[in-house]
Image 1 (cartoon, helix red, strand yellow):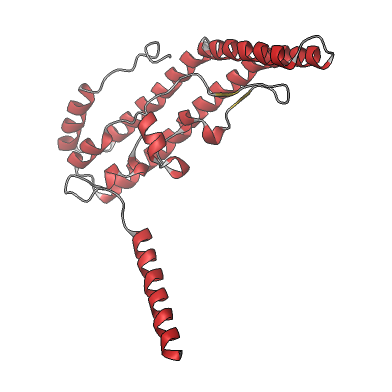
Image 2: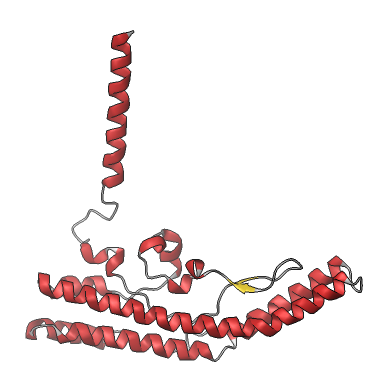
Length: 230
């Protein structure tokens, strides 16, 4: 029995160690075309000034924006957003190939990391300003929602009638968020964040690197903020 217990403990220990090894493996592509620049930390989101997702108002709760942590527009492909759901729904600048081609030295890589950090702060600031404008848009709709609640509470309308009115109101909320002029302002602010990032990267390159960089920039599509408003 003692030997059986020792064998069982050894098997459990081996299983545990294999589990740790599996968790610590690099889950990225293993072919030669992959490099560290394909990792989430090196990916930069394109401007996204789409209208906010909302939590619909009900008789029990007001209209609200989805929590910032669930707002896909904040996604920079790092941290909690490093999952397929967000990767499939957000567009990122195609930086990996050009960064590989530049053959940055260690000092340059650290500088680029700093530029990307500053970009993310800049991008987040633009998004927070947009969310504040969206919260202001919700206020009059929540007043209408309160009146619907009062009418239901006073027996002037049925629960079904109240639900139908709230559903119509939700459609109006979404349209108002789409028509929000602050969306254009936010997109232009994010474009400026992007311009500064690209200019900063160019500023640390040597002559040979800069030639490759400028050739790549010339092919980078311009962003039309009016065109991305959906």
